[in-house]
Amino acid sequence: MRRIHKTCNLSTVYKAWQDGIEASGQPHPPYRSSNDDYYWDVAMNLYHCQGGLCAYTEMLLCSPELYQANRWQNGRYAESAEGNPNVKGQLEHFYKELKQNRGWLWDNFFMVDSDVNTKVKKSHVVDPILKPDAADYNEFEKLEYDMSKHVFIPNSGLPEAVRERINEMILILGINYDPIRELRRIYFSRILKMIEFKIETWDSINPEMFPTAYAMMRMTNTEGG
Image (cartoon, rainbow, N blue to C red):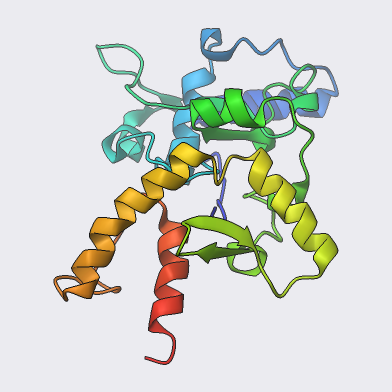
């Protein structure tokens, strides 16, 4: 799970609206998911920031052409004649307790895989230690990737108490949710074979998804030249 630099620089009408509510100190209007006027403005600006990937698992959820800057007009996401964009995933509140009164808070939103959101994370209390847009979040300091099992684990150099916190959040965010772990194994098996047979190199491949796992495997396998 990589660091997300989350800037609402495209859906500026929504951001000005949200900033105004925050400045007033009043509760946000009720959050009604995709029934709300700004849902797609938020969702697609997040996909622009997240590179079309699930914020937690890094599965591919949205095609690149759908979140290019030319899709926005006058600070709003311009839907096509066919209607809503064809994407996977859900708009998710990192801190569920903020959903009732601050349900449109930009800083609390991510786009994530629907099964991870509804079947794994649900309403669990979260620890900000793995909030991917936090200023102090660095995936290479917090996590390691076990290439033999295709799972993320806490960085072994951290104190035990910190590793326990990270491990709990790995579970809550579904980062090693079994179907996703298996998808990583299948996805990387082809890539690793191409590298093994020198069809590709670690430097020549730009993975469409799971970039953090790939970066960590690359570091492990190219250390020392």
